[in-house]
Image 1 (cartoon, rainbow, N blue to C red):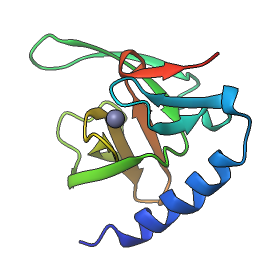
Image 2: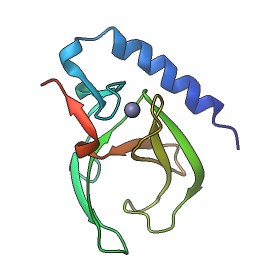
Image 3: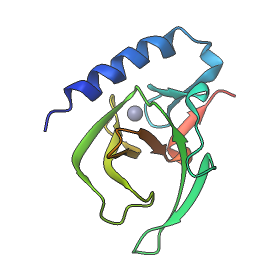
Image 4: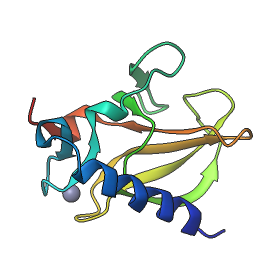
Length: 125
Ligand SMILES: [Zn+2]
């Protein structure tokens, strides 16, 4: 499966992010690459911020964004251990330093969002 349509979407969105106020940018904590923006925050299942525990007992905090232009998406889509019912997930990495920043979710209705780990991001706000 090709990631090209997603990649195009990502770069279109990145162009828009760069035109917005710098204070709205949310960056990779590791390399400071712009990842997303506060204006991209969305609520999934009525919450922006979610807390999950994986099968190994590790707690994850994630925040939902409809776009994360600074990420690359990798891995085959899977619904295994999926935190959001009806969605399949892939990994979302920083495009610059490849640090994993969260996950990309998509469902059968082509609805998609990013769930990003706040402790791996920095905001100038
Ligand atoms: Zn990075």
